[in-house]
Length: 202
Image (cartoon, rainbow, N blue to C red; front, side, top):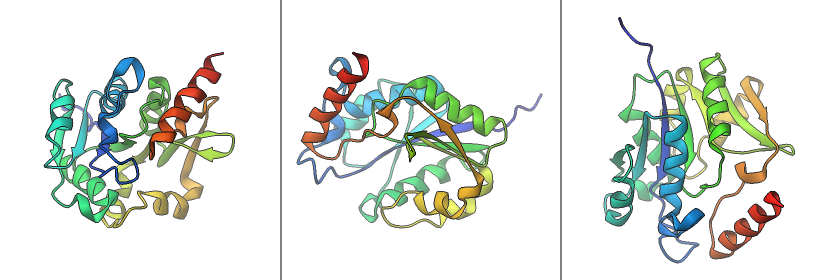
């Protein structure tokens, strides 16, 4: 019996952390777990078939991710921007029915929200993403119909252009947590994110 093509998670983890000042993806977050490792675990809980795209020279991160079941893909063109990593990930799983694109510097996204994005794709959505208070969050899911368009992306804007261009095909998932918006670019963001999470739990 032939199984349906899978939906694959793609964790983009090949950034240079210029604004952070050091490799932010190794910074401890929840329970002292490195940021990218926490993001990978969240993605894997929702999508066991997931890959992580990393820099070829980031051996410390590769070692951390190797402790999980995530497949590791290296992007030799990471210096060209985040979209080069997205394209690298897409080419690694061309037969997928869709992809859930997650960012390694967003380690606080609840697993159940990732699962909701996955379910939307399985139910036929072309694009799906969580929204909090009118703002689109992450991760973003794309059905396979966008493969050719996604492969044309260049630069550092992610797939935002495709989402904007096809806004009428975006399925919004209204969520009650700002965790879908919290990304870490600078050390202050890490401190602020912990404070925001504490406020959420109060």
